[in-house]
Image 1 (tube, rainbow, N blue to C red):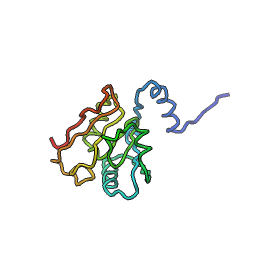
Image 2: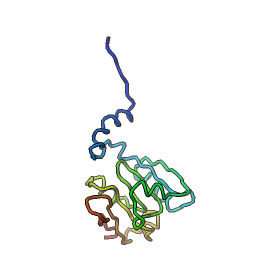
Image 3: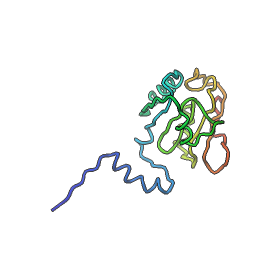
Image 4: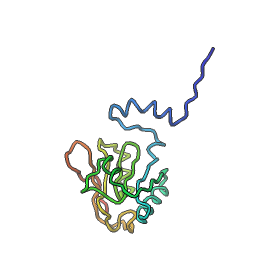
Length: 157
């Protein structure tokens, strides 16, 4: 007698990636990498603009509106000096604040051993805050080998 087991794609991806994640290796499933969950407050218009830009860029976005983002930011390892107005999770990475698409592309291409990348505050001209390609601000990587955040990407150069 031949036994056949059918696993759903999400369950199969979990079974395949769980041992890697346990070893600290991010899962590499393309669909998982293109999906993100954005935690934001329900009244934030700039977060909506950023979320819409992620969808337009091809990301599968799930939005979780919350009155208080403090627990999410704490769980994500975002220090107060890196906080932006929303927090997104994409695979094993955290995207804090108005992170530009170019920095996300760099993160996905290089796959650095960091917890995430952040744009502190709400810089004028950043994605969601007017989107001026010449706006200059720094995207920081955090949660890596360094004790403090390090510059990851310089916008506007």
